[in-house]
Length: 285
Image 1: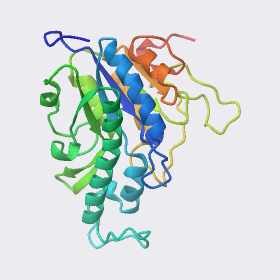
Image 2 (image 1 turned 30 degrees about the vertical axis):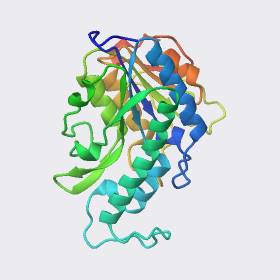
Image 3 (image 1 turned 120 degrees about the horizontal axis):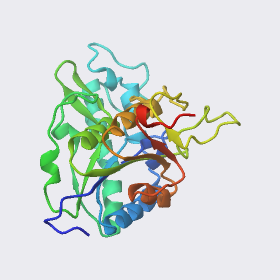
């Protein structure tokens, strides 16, 4: 483990919401998956890296946010036809509810990390970020200058927006900013649920194969559940990963259901998955 005078060798890991939750069942965590990922983080830290964890919302955020159109900001005088017995009567109450639910999910993640001996610090974006998309405002660098063996944890969240009161800041945009602005990021690993990486065709196509190397000038195939997801799904992840690959050498999409692949990607290996490279770096066919 690095000492307090050694510059951090950052590894940013994104746990997708569809990986750590059952995305279509309200507030349903996949605890075994979370626990296995915590074990992977422990191995990565023991190898001398400094992990940063960013996790998605899954069924703890997207379902209510979609029903109440929180990603669209304030819609005056509007309410959904059905609230599914939530006891919520306004977008403001929905924001509060999603905030509470996200802390519940975050607690699951943090407690799991603690059970394998890891120390964490949690930084809800609602407390320091403003706006959505990659140009959100907010300084997170101050959170990263504590004890070098403390793992910062961030997550996608409902945040304040100057132009429309509130909106959804995706964890993928937090990952992008961390990778672009921190010095010493050696790897960024997007841990996926239900996929080995990026595919050559839609997932339900029997001829679909894993794409081992992908750049932003290549076709992208993936499932985006517009009925639930309030961010950009796999397309957003790929777009952000393509930008990150311009400044970070090791950028991967791997199955988070195989923690050994997460470890291998984080430590400079060649796991089964999709390596993301800038367009100019892609080998000619």
